[in-house]
Length: 288
Image 1 (cartoon, rainbow, N blue to C red):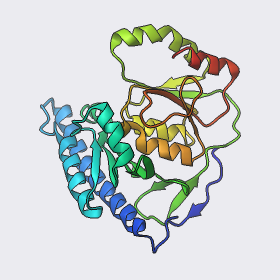
Image 2: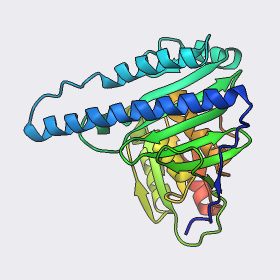
Image 3: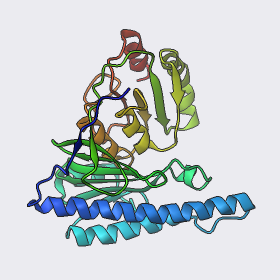
């Protein structure tokens, strides 16, 4: 069972300017989630009827709406957004460290699921200044579940829309039993073939393996009560920024395969909320 969760009020001070930025941006995420839900059920209906969907570019439309709204919430904002990304990796890294306010957006994480009528998708939004993510949201519209994090204040789970009904998360539970692993791998087939034999050795060290097709949700679930370990290969900051802040604030650990502290630009890392066996750590290290 997960640790007992204490209901708390929004941790940001009511007098803080950031309090309004936080609340307004969360309201925006909920609004965009309702729009995604509407389109999802229409996509589902098209699929059931064998029709070609007319909603093929909804992720781009949602991203544009979010960027316009966030500029009003926080003027002079810069963006790192999946659908409109045009920078080189070097420019992206530099801008991340120097610019602020800075929003990292994935308007539809799990788009392949969405367009195939699979209800595992999310909106991911993180706010950063000078290379530090200060708060973030991962919102699953279908279930109205939100995973929220505020740097230095904690990670919170919310179902519904009332900000005074949060449940604070602490993933450092003492749990016995075998581990459940999720993974997200974005590699060319040739590179995946090289890793596959080592990956099988990791699979042998856990009870079962899951692949959800929605990276931000996988990271949050690995930091909460559902999963124990997550392995990530090939990602961009918009895939992981919001989830990683949630993980760290929940007490989870994020490391590269060499055992070093992972950041938002690392292409390969694992997340754990439990102590790993020597055998499992060795199997993970062999993946590098």
